[in-house]
Image 1 (cartoon, rainbow, N blue to C red):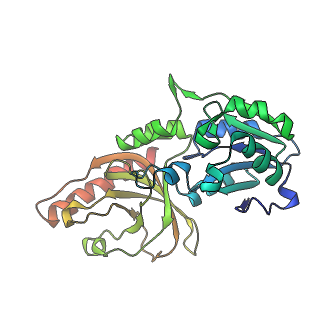
Image 2: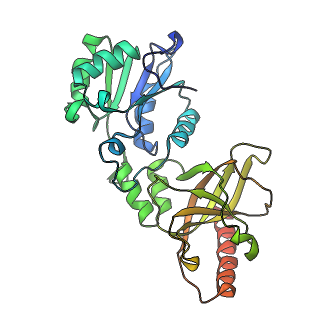
Image 3: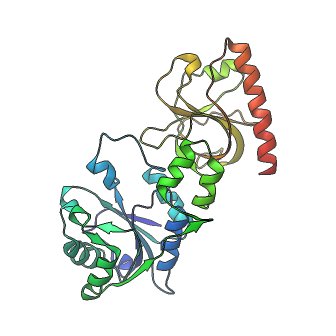
Length: 308
């Protein structure tokens, strides 16, 4: 999959694409339905998205809300068979475009789309004035065929990034999985921590969750994929997400203990999938109590993962 960030320099082979348009935070079942509707035989499949997320641009001081960073989103879209990811820079110039100018100048002239697909709740243009129906009305004059994908439901509930965030905040990763169509993942480089886990017999791979919507703080059974380097592969493990109140740390992060694994993976890209919530964060009277709980957590995680 090619990632194209300069809309004024789209190569000829990427033009004429049939593209799904949206933010696609989480790439959940609703997003996948929009992308599937954009698939056309013999036509390149594209996705048009925005970085930073418009909500981040308009409200930079708001609490973190993203389900995935740009790299994780690109990785997921590549797995879905997308040929071209048009990652448009969201800035003042783009935000100020009228719906008509966005369709005419960006989608048609710059990207050269032949077909555009959006969800029924899609909004665009200055002041979010444009709707999915606006795009359908404007598309033909710009040479773009437009389709609108209906909202997707799981049971009686509409699938949305908002509902997935709530499920994760409640410590319900299995419910999030049902709406996502895949396990929720935290993806990024392994960074150096204080190496306290090594002294406890539980060396962990540390990752920042800065900028991401935090799941409920606590311990999870996880599947983890090392995406690069000589230890690339899939592993089972247990992860602690939170601020480590036992040690007075205030910056949230994700610490993953990989079962039956002891290699150095600093700098490698790790993708940690939340399978099940085990328990909330706890403070113990001393290290023996913490270690005993970690033993119990890992035993339970192994049992869950063996049957997941």
